[in-house]
Length: 255
Image 1 (cartoon, rainbow, N blue to C red):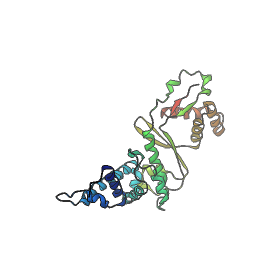
Image 2: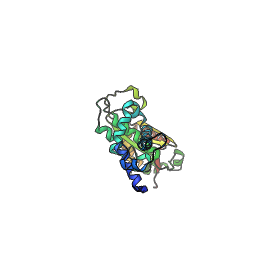
Image 3: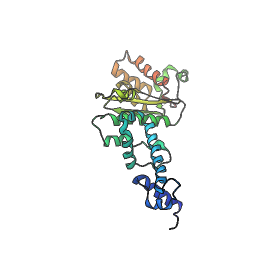
Image 4: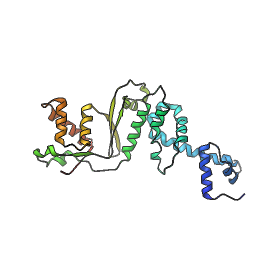
């Protein structure tokens, strides 16, 4: 039997990975060693492949893995059988994992898909493009009468995760589950090499939505005034802006 070419070997190895057993044609092309049969030699590499993928998923979803405990590895094997790795970078491997958890919903952890979405969002903002954020001293030269015209956009390393559950509590203490339902919005962002998330009060959520829609600072102040009254609005709007600047969330747009 002629030896298969490289592409054929690769195809048969790929088939071996996803069939669970070494491909017979690949077994026929591999020589035995002094201690191992061809099929056993192939299994060393197929097992290593899945071990590396499982390690990657565990690193990307550590809280989800902690909650699922011994069920996490077999669950991930089922996930990889449906969604095999097809891209060079492992950062894309868990893209569909939250939805896969939802498809295989476990009544013990109805909030687990959203916890996985939070972990996925944290990974996404960690990998997001770097930009130079605006700081409060950068705005010192803006005349008071021009502040209302200021517009900002959020940094690329920013996201919002919404859930019917307070999944940040499960993230902070996986052993504290189960959770009671509680509508929650979390902002997720990166400063330097650290990723953070924090729950959003409704006022901040609405103000951020206005900012992301391109509204000027004056419109954000008006929105705040509608919620807290005109007397309290300047301090509350200024407090929100100061918090966003301190967290390095914003990039200033040209006038």
